[in-house]
Length: 292
Image 1: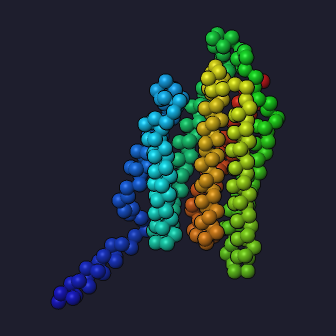
Image 2 (image 1 turned 60 degrees about the vertical axis):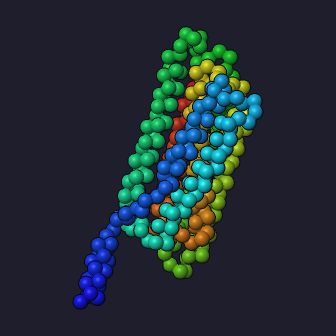
Image 3 (image 1 turned 135 degrees about the vertical axis):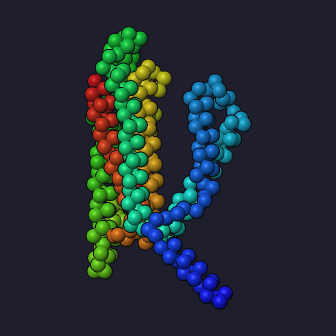
């Protein structure tokens, strides 16, 4: 009798677990990532206002920043590792779950568009009706703008080329359905991802070179502030997208992706295309139109 009752309990348990949704287990990583990221933001604010920190030597704030930065990446690694285990090896990311994740990525990209819209608004507001404090002229007097068709145009070509290469990688993966084509399409998808990661690194290095050799800083009038904040935030997104794609490349090498189960790579590709489109608006509005 007792054995029959236990058997019925197990059957009900199996039936209860047969649903297309993923009930996530409690995880400590989100709260830890938030705490360490908040400390990094506090240090960044203090760095931009150097009167809040003693930047002449190592202080308590510097050690807190360094520890927060290290533990932030450790927690991010652990958190993403759990997600990869849940999706790839435990099979929790069903088609219904992937659909919900796609909606989440779409909403996240929309929030990023609104985020950049605020900085574009600040730039156009300052450039279309320049204040008397900057001489009623745009760009302000004393600002030597960057040459549009030099490094900015080169970065534009790099990002557009990266969009082509990452699309090539995705297309090769989704057509990888037969054993006859598996070797060729896998080689194409890996090659496309490697090229895209290289393009992302080149873009970051060129932008760093551009910042170092620019004749103005973030403190030079409203032009310098809006220029560095907008392009710098975009550069940060390029760096994050490059890391995102590099992780997907490592996962692809380890055979984590198939033609029907590759949401991680798909999300990275969507994010990268968003970065491409934002850069086109940046190049046209800030480098070309706003730099005249």
